[in-house]
Amino acid sequence: MKKLLGLVLILMLVLTTGVFAEEDGIRIGLVWQNITSEMGSDMQAGAMYMANELGLKKEDVLFVDGESSLENQINAIDDLIVSGIDAIVIWPYDDFGIGQSIISCNEAGIPVVTVDVMAQTGEVVNHVASDNYEIGQIDGKYAAEYLFEKYGEYKGTCLAIGYPLLNSTRDRVQGFKDYMAQYENVKIEEYNLQNHTFEDGQAMADDLLQRYPEGSFDIFMGCSCAPGLGGCVAASTFGREDDYKVVCVDNIAQLRAECTAEKSALLGFVAQDPFDMGMTSVAKAVAAARGEDPGEFMTTTNLF
Image (cartoon, rainbow, N blue to C red; front, side, top):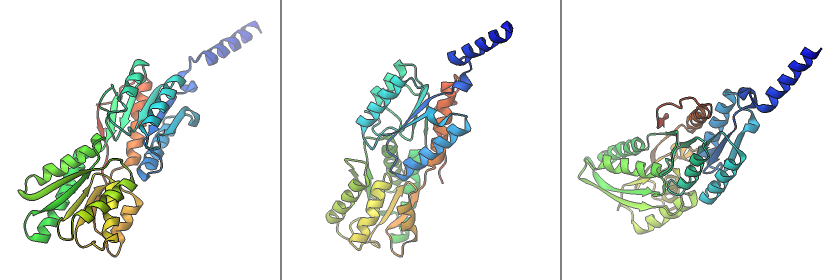
């Protein structure tokens, strides 16, 4: 009887002191730019799927919607550090501004994985993203083919709409520009969004169509779906679907609808795989939390 009681007491001690790490579970934090976008929700779905596959309990995956605010993300990361999480995945809203929060995680010994947008400061164990430079190159390839079809040679004017606060969008514009640089008669004019939202993308497109009369440019390149969709909607609003063509990034319902519309300025878009990005980022974070090798730095995921 004494031996049995002793075994029970030992078992209780083991359970309460956390010797069985697998049973206690690993707690991870997910801090997103936003959950309202299709990319954000798909990426969250992939992240939650992988967390479940790896045996994490639902309550041990702490998700925070940054609501397109750097301040919200900073505050969320501070709270997660205090809560004692084992790893964190961040989809930064501002690749410069998020740096100090990552440094705070470094100081607390919490491994960080960034997804889609690479932070400019702080140490991360892995970065999971599409090859954004390649995305810009693909957009450039299809734009160049359209210009040749239109004029019988590679010439024309392209408006490239970027967002300078994110390296992902900067890389896409740079890839597009570099691809087009091989054609000396193709002119690129750059414009930047102040805020990376659909509203600002629409406002930018409306403004540019009033500045550029019909026949004055050929390609509207959007660094993401925000300006890309704005370029499509503005073309419809001003009756200029046949005047210029739009190339952009991201696989969202509104862009898919443009593909089947009777009239649309959309030439095409490059589709990322956000579900895969979410899955991969959580797999890397959990590996790091368990003291395992998260793999070669900078993991590139699929394009459709």
